[in-house]
Image 1 (cartoon, rainbow, N blue to C red):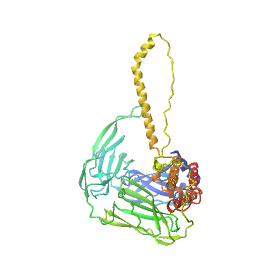
Image 2 (cartoon, one colour):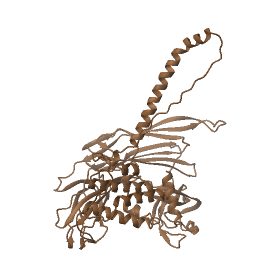
Image 3 (cartoon, rainbow, N blue to C red):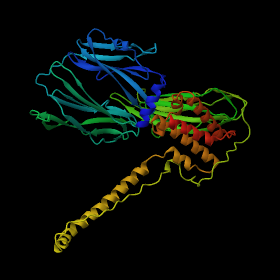
Image 4 (cartoon, rainbow, N blue to C red):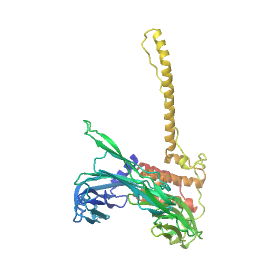
Length: 560
C-alpha cells in the first residue's frame, strides 16, 4: 500500500499524467419514478479538471440537477494507479419520459477538454404504494433460456421503504450452473430520496455458466433483513428484528449447441478480437511483440489462442497470457490478452499468416468465425551477427528445477526471554502447600503456552510460505544455465516493475507500465527489454552485461 501511494505521489509530482485522461458520467440508478431523487457523479480520471468543470453538466427539461460537492482520491484497477476527481449531484425526476444526459465537454487545467459518455435515464409514472409492502425482494435470471456453455446473470434485489440496518442474501444451490473462474459477483446498495420517504435498495448479480442441458429448476433466494425497532438508547444504538424474505423458485431452460464445425474454439458468446504488432519494420533477428486482445460476454477459461502455422523466415515464442473478468448489474465481460514474440530470420517482405477463431454466438444462433490478421513485416538487415554468448555469470547454486516463484526467504525463529521472581517468605510450610495446590494449574498453563507458541510458529511459517518472492531473492538464486538465467532476469525485471506500480505480476501490462514511468527511465527500460528479447529469443549477442543492467534498472525502480 505504501509503495502504491508513493508511486501515485511521484506521478503527480512530475506534472504530466502517466495515462490519457478521461471523463465519466455515472448514476446510482437509471430508472426513477416521478418525485424520486438519485445521485449523479461526474468523474475526471488521470487529469485535473478546471473549476468550471462543475458547470459542464446540464440536464434536459423534466429533470432537476443540484450540485452537492466534490472530492478526490486514488484508485487502482490492478494495472495502474489513477487520481480521480469527482463532482456529485442530486438528480431529481419531475416528469415521465426517456431522457439522455450528455455527452459533455469537461475543461481541464491544462487548457484541453475531455468528452464524457452519455447516460440514458427513464422516468416512470409514480407507483401506488398505499397498502403495499415496505420490504420487497425479487430474484431471477436475466433470461429464461440459454445455450449450454453460455454465461447468464442471476440478479437479486431488495427494495425497502423503512429504515434497514443491513441485509444478508442466501442464494440457492444452483443446479447445472457454476460460476466462471474469472469475474466476481457484483453488488451495490444505495438510497433514493422519495416524497414518501427514503428508499433503500440492495442489488446484486452473479455470473453463471450453464453446464447441463434441460429444464434446470432453481430454489428461491432468501434475504435476511435487519430492521430497527424501538428508540435509540443514549449510546445511539437500537434493537432490531430480523425478517426473512424468500423469493419464488425459478426455472432456466438450457439448450444444446448445434453441431460444431471444424476448428470450433469452445468460445460461447459474442466476442471481439484485436491484433497488434508493436512495429512493422524490423531487422533480422530482432523481436516484434504481437498482442491479441479478445473480449466478450462469454467465459474464456480453457481457451488457447491457436499457434501460427510454420512460416519460412519466422520464429514464434510464447510470452505471456492474462485472463480477467468483470461483472456489473446488466452484463458479464471476460478479457484475454495473449502476447507472443515474433523473430524474423530472413530479409524481405514477410507476409504473416492469419489465424481464425470460431465461436458460437447465442444472439445470432450460429457459429461465427473471427479472423486475426497480422499483416506484413518489412525485414531489414540485422544489426548484429553470430550466436549470443551469455557468460561471465557469477557461480550460484544450481536451482534450475525451481521456478523463481518457489524461492522463499529465510524462516523466522522464535525468540525466548526467561526471568525469575521471588515471593515473600511466609513460613516453611506455606510455599510447599501452594506448590502442591498450584502444580496442576501450572502444568496446564505450560502446555497451553507451548501449544500457542507452536500455533504462532505455524502461522508465521504459512505467511512466509505464501509471501511472493522479492526481486533480491530472485536475483540471488538465478539458474546457471544461460537460457534459464536470461529468463530469470526477465522475470526479476517484470517483478520489479509490477511492485513499483503496485500490482501483481499476473496483472502487469508491461508496455503500458513502462510508458507511464516517464523519461529517462521509460526509454531506458524499453531498450533493456528489447535487448533481453533479442538475447533470449533471437540468439543475438548482447554486447553488454545484461545482468548488471537489469540489477541497475531494478535499483532505479526501487529508489524512485
